[in-house]
Length: 395
Image (cartoon, rainbow, N blue to C red):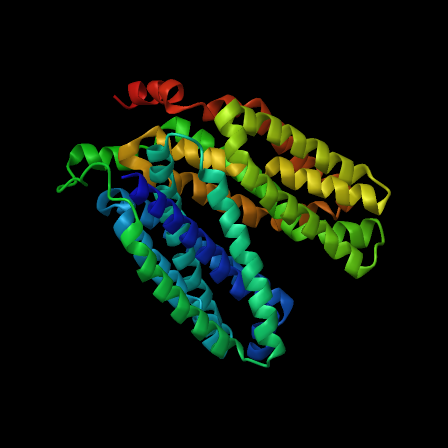
């Protein structure tokens, strides 16, 4: 059993790396595909909303399916779907086909995101110690691999269609090869979705919605770093383009390293401490970056911001998954879905605010969200203490 559990953990790592790799390969080819289709940045921005909409729909659909059929069945199918749809943007010839391709890719990504996180919760439950943060670090590693491989294929003159079709083939193969190592459901899925099951599916506990609200706030903070960290150094501090790019690099590197270390800290101090002190550290880091007039201090601030945020989202996903073993997929889908909307909302919220206040001043909105998350950290306490009120309410 121990060997099988270790194999299941490695397989889960593989799916997280695969997800990061697939989405990273799309991101690497965005400029080339934009030029090939003949659209501008504004049109691309609207099309990217379809990617987000597809992901949100996929998350909500696959959550209950994961609970019904088991992650062992749904994860490989979701991974194969995500891999197959990543080829579609490379084949698009106009704005309409690109929009349809991004909608499909978003759905594949959303399905894989929720189902693999549901299986990660199952693996964590079997290990009886925190392992979730390392899985999320694996996603980041997949993105780094995509950047390296994508840069190489572009330097060789490969077209997006050739590269993404190759990536799709590799992704589908990896989806199939990793599937046998996944864990079987701890309890058999219900044969008939009775009235009670339908009621449970429709009435998500208040505890889960509170976790989802925190996920929205924290992932909005991540979205702010993704979209505005480089522009902050460029526009506010007048840094050269190459130096400004280091802002996101500092954030992403610190987040990846932090996630590799978080599981040990969570095992020792508990998930509530990770969320509380991590969110507080993130608030301090972003405040330092926003108030700094020096590039080195701003870079350090973005790095501290990434280190602080690194363990927050995994604790929220883990708490949602462990709240009810019979509704792991549905609960994770709620938290992941609102969290994803938060990440998309980052540019939508900060952009309009810059019309009224300087860019660095707008960063105090995510700072406030980090403070809220730090104050509400007790919500992620282990199920033995946090799940009892939820079960009583549901009864």
